[in-house]
Length: 147
Image 1 (tube, rainbow, N blue to C red):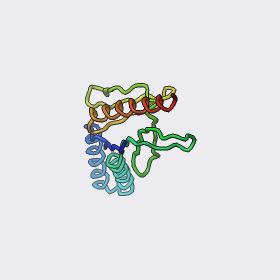
Image 2 (tube, one colour):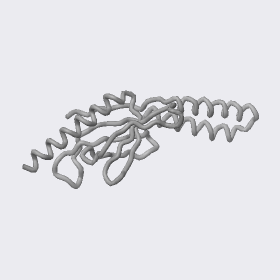
Image 3 (cartoon, helix red, strand yellow):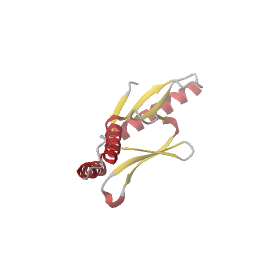
Image 4 (cartoon, rainbow, N blue to C red):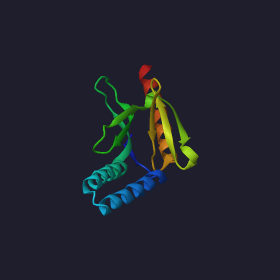
């Protein structure tokens, strides 16, 4: 199957946090605390970079320790973070979780031996459909190889 890429959703919490940090930078420069202001600017740039460059990619990859290709969910959280790969055959469940006061929500994926990863794709319904479709294809291909 071809690769499918999903981008991260901009949440209300991120927008509020960005506005708060921006006001903090303005205040710090106003009271002539430029060094602290520059540190907060670096934090803001890191926040923006992480949200803009986070991608969730479904791909068929051949692991080093196996002979056959496997389906993976590759989570890339930007230039300053490590990438994470989740084998789709190990995914146990994917459920929608809500944050405090219901302001935001995310998908919680449980895989392997109680490993958890939270994702926030823009199109959640298409993401879940792609996940289930690739899981079913992975199970069918592994069953045909075993027989």
